[in-house]
Image (cartoon, rainbow, N blue to C red; front, side, top):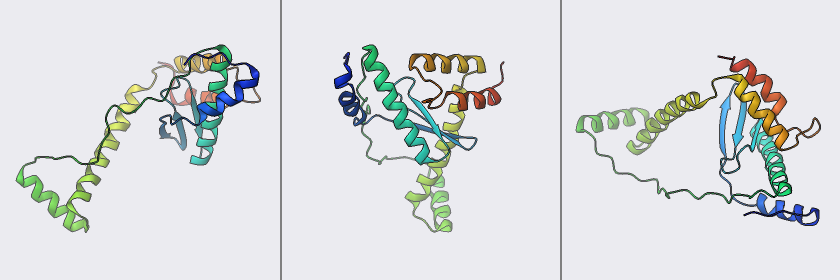
Length: 178
C-alpha cells in the first residue's frame, strides 16, 4: 500500500497498521532481549524484560509507520506463513532407536511422544543458535553504519531514541572490527 498521509489522518492510519498481525522474531543475548519485525525492515527494539521489549517494540513500530507514511512510502502487509503446520508428523526410524527412545521416556516418566518432542526441541535450539551466530555482521562498522542510517531515516533524536545508542555501545564491545 502506498499512501501519503496528511497530519489529520496520520494517527488514524498508524492505529490501523498497529492492529495488523506482523510476525515478530526475538533473540536473547547477554541478558537482553532483541526483537525485529521482518516485514518492516529496520523496525527493531530491545529490552531487559519481555514487558520492556514489547513496549519498546510498539514504540518502534509506531515510529516506523509514521516515518514511512510521512515520506509516502508503501506499508507492507503482514506476510502469511507459507504453510500451516498441524503439529503432527510421521517419522520412520530403526527399531533399535524406537526401543531406546521408549526406554528413555519410561526412565523420565513421560510419554514417548513427549520425549521425542523434548529431544527435537533441544536439537533445534542448538542448531538455531549456531545459525544466528553465522548470520551476524562481521564488522562493528557495518552495524554502526546501519544504525546511523536507521537513526537518520526515522529521525530519531535524543529524546525519542528507541535503541541506537544503547545497542551501539553493546555492539561495539561484542563485535570488534575484523
